[in-house]
Image 1 (cartoon, rainbow, N blue to C red):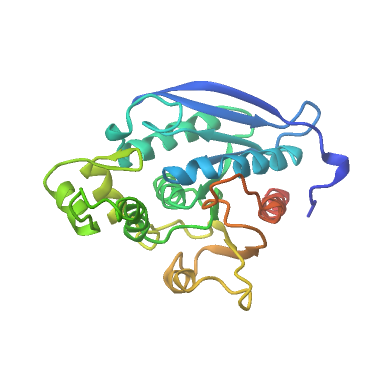
Image 2 (cartoon, rainbow, N blue to C red):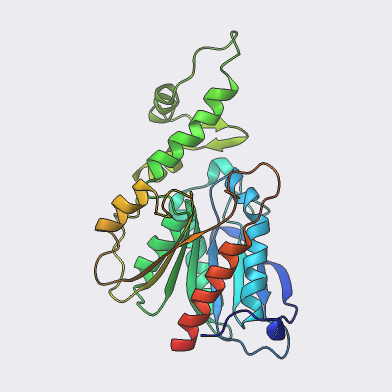
Length: 289
């Protein structure tokens, strides 16, 4: 196995562009190894949900730069209705996002090195896993950062942000997760801290789970989670999930990283240990390939 070393730290090249897809033009950035560094494939990144997407940008860039130094490119795409891509957030749908990632995978497959791994962060982990199941390619690695096991729980947490923001507003009716769900059930979109979520998207997120995704036997999976300092064990939800998923047929590696919860921090926060561990694991995978 070859780790990221000083001798291999050539600068990466970064190419922003708009990708044409059936749902519209998507803003994308392709991080590539520098000239003179042998290309060993590409990774496709599925970003997190809403504000977590913005908070993870710095970490995504750092990881892409680290992978470029060992000859692995990274494609980062703003999905339909998010970031700088076309579409309004209210028009975003789970199946559109999944199709966006499929188009992005096809774009990489048509280029030197192809796509060797899908990388999902937080809720993006479920999207990445669902795309992996659709592709049914056991040689395609799956990188999962601080993965969300259940979309419903994740959506509940996001809804509580709006509830907290209105707790001191006596001029507004009491807001609960139940009242927001009633709006969705009635066909009305719900605005939460600037994101207008359509009922169809809310329903799809609530139904999305990692345990419901069947992966091809032999799939190499890298599960990365923040260390809490309590016995250096995975969180209870993760341990419960991994007892049943992805099954004995997958080649699962779990690691803990030291560092802040960068997906939650309001100010820029990075965890170099997460970057190092991911690059080391994928480097070893490509060496064995």
